[in-house]
Image 1 (cartoon, helix red, strand yellow):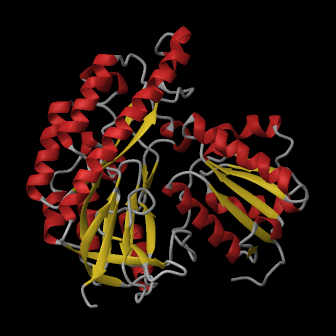
Image 2: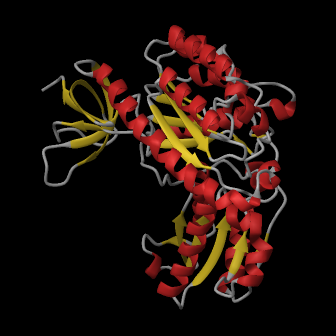
Image 3: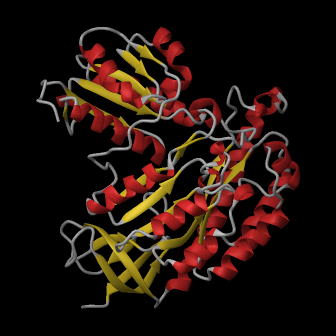
Length: 445
C-alpha cells in the first residue's frame, strides 16, 4: 500500500450483491493508491454513490440517494458510480449539476484516476468499455466470515424484460483459475461462507465455448477446509443436472437453489424469451428434490408483464402452490427502454396494469408467507448447523443462519445463547418457528 495522500472517501452502497462486490473492488483499489476510507459520509472528502439501474424503483432510489447526499453534504465531492452511471452517465452528467463526476462499472481499475480528477476539481465522465478488474478485495462489506464471489459479468439470455445485458453487456466469464484462487484467498482470511453469484451461474464459461460451471464446482470441492458454498441464481433453462451429484458428494456445497422462474404461463414465458414451461420446470424441481431431499428452493416471480391477464396470473399462482417454494420474491414489471418488452402492451392501460400488478404482487406475497411458514415447520426439532453472525446487544441471544437461509434475503436463526462468537459454527436443535425465522438451542449447553 502506498503512503496516505490524505484523501478520504466513503462508498454509499445500493443494489444487489454483484454491486456490493464492485464496491469492495473499488475500496481495495483506492486504499492501495493511498486513499483513506471513512466510515461516515460527513467525514469523507469524496462520496461515491454506487448505484443500481436495473428497474425504475431502483433508479429512483439511486437518484434520490445521490441528491440527498448533495443536500446533506454541500461541500463534498460526489461521484456517481455503478449501474445507473454506466447506463445513463452522459445524460445524468448533463442534467445533474449536483454531480462532480460519473464513473461507469465496466472498468473498475480506473477508479483511482477518476477519483483523483474529481477531488482536483475536474468533472470526469468515464463510461468505459468492458475490462475485468483484478480479483482482489481487502475488505468485505458483508461480514468477515461471509463473502460473495462473482464468477461472471453480463448475460447472454436476453430475456425480453431484462436490462442487464444493456447495463452490464453480454456474458463475460472470469478465468476458472482466478475464481478458485480468489476463493483460496478468502478461505485463508477466515471466510467460511462463499456465495457464488452471477446473472446465471450455469452459463459460466459458455462465452469461451465450454460450460465450465460443473468443473468449477469440482475444483472448489477439491479445496480443503470447513466451509459452506452457496449457489445464488441459476437460470432454469440452463440448469446443469450434473451438479446435483457433485453437491450430493460434497455436503459443503449447500442444497440451496435460487432459480428465477419468473412465470409459469406458456404464453408469458414465450414472450419473455424463456424456452421452458411449467411442466418442464415441475420436472426439474422434482428431480432436484428427489436427488437432494433437503433441498431448499428460492425463486422470483414477475407480475404485470405485458399481455398477462387473469388467466395467466392464475397459472402462475397455481404453479407457486404446486411447487411450495421455501422462499420467493415477487416483483412488478418495470418497463425498461432498450428491452424487447418496452414496446409491448397498450400504453393507455399502463397505469391500470400497474395497479392491478401491485394487487397481484400482494396476493402472491401473502400466499408465499403462508407457504414459507409451512415449509419452515419441517425443520422443527431437527438438528441444524448454524453459522453465528452477531450477538444481540443486551440479550442472552445471538443471530446466525442455517444452510436454508441465504444472507440478507431469507430468515435468520435466533440462537438462544450469547456464548458464541461471530464466525463460529454451532450444532443446534430447532425449538420454535417464528414465521420466516427459527429459534435454535445449542446442543453443547
